Image 1 (cartoon, rainbow, N blue to C red):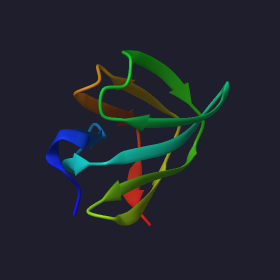
Image 2 (cartoon, one colour):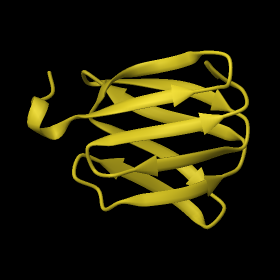
Image 3 (tube, helix red, strand yellow):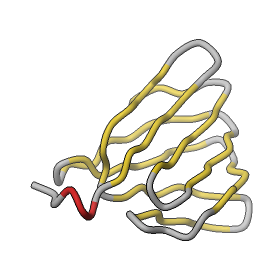
Image 4 (cartoon, rainbow, N blue to C red):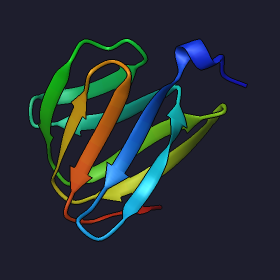
Length: 89
């Protein structure tokens, strides 16, 4: 089980729904500039990302999501993925 000091809130949002909302230990995604990992306390960031897989670690288990082109933002405490389409795979 993850220590809450090492987790942060993640939201994966589309115009129609909240695909995921919860505390995660880390996420992994590709940006147009390369691969990116985000953990708690990450420096503030806004990244444009191509369509593809986003992996998130929740309670020691990796969940996978397929997202259309998306924007990833974080302030170190909350991360958000804003996509036109996204679903758990």
